[in-house]
Picture 1 (cartoon, helix red, strand yellow):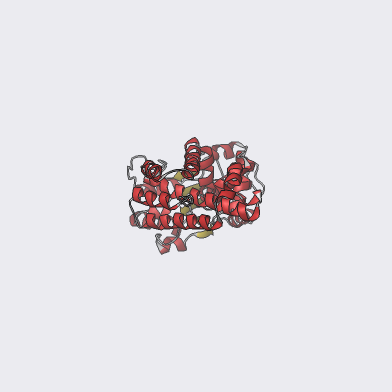
Picture 2 (picture 1 turned 90 degrees about the vertical axis):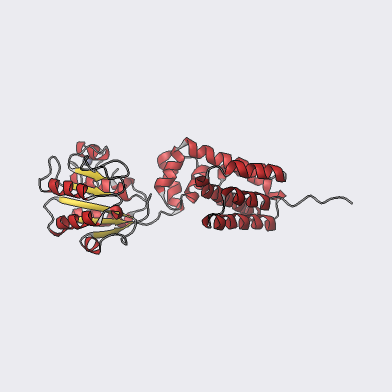
Amino acid sequence: MPFRDLVNQDHAVLLLRTAVRSSRVSHAYLFVGPRGVGRHRTAIAFAQLLNCERANSDACGQCRACTLIASGQHPDVRVVDVAGGRVLDPEDTTKTGIGIKQVLALRREVVYPPYQGRWKVYVLADAETMTTEAANSLLKVLEEPPDRVVIILIAESTVPLLPTVVSRCQLVRFSLIPAPAIERALVERHGVPKGRARFVAALSGGELGRAVRWVTSEETQQRRERILDLLERLEGADPLDRLDAAEEFSKDKDDLPELLEIALYWYRDILVWQQTGEDDRLINLDRRDRIVALAPTLSPALLNARIQAVEDAGDALERNVHPRLLLETLFLRIAPPPAPTRR
Ligand SMILES: [Zn+2]
């Protein structure tokens, strides 16, 4: 995973490449930004560039060093990811974060020169979970850094970290990735059909990692299909069917935010189609035919009222309203207007 494979983190890449090219590699970096935007992948790409056997401005991605680093087997590139089960001190059974034993193990290791490569690289994921004791111990390394050692801390924010630790690291900021860049990456690198890539990119909230997990997970794809099928089914459902559907879909509370997002984009798509008739603006491009069929049957006022109902449900979710009650209210509110009765 060399730098050229990263999506949209040009600022971070430029900073790190320049450091290598000008031989001003810092002994400690703090990668700060939201999850899923490539912080960890950038750390690995940087470790590759530092140790690649054929590097110029980027790692080759092919040599022995690059391959070993990519597969997590390089003896000089070590990752501490407690949640992911990767630790330096296997005796340490702390599961909640980076404890003192991990940092003591790091301190024992860094005094030795690299075994195979040019640089030893330590990547500490979820650095905000470091205990104060561990952070104070790490500070000793940061204050007197050994030669040829780079420590990369990865965190979502600098706030939970000891200010003394932050001040000893070079800060590298990561930002959310714009939806069109995610869409392109899904199409070009993961072979996702354009319509689906558009939808996933819109839902991913700027997190490429999340988008990739969605497209590679059969389960997630089936869940989306199921939700879209439900929304279509609701068009013709009577109130009892709606209550049944609410019961069925309220079983997994964790899926509710996704259901609401999908519903929001669905009604938005129908509205957008009414106003523009342009494929390019649809998020659920893979269901274009259904959108086209539904558009003439629903008025803009009705669609806006449904979008409002979905947004209200989102607010209710944040207030911890019971999932079933929340969905019952929502499904009744997104009903089509009653057919005019004959007198
Ligand atoms: Zn290489």
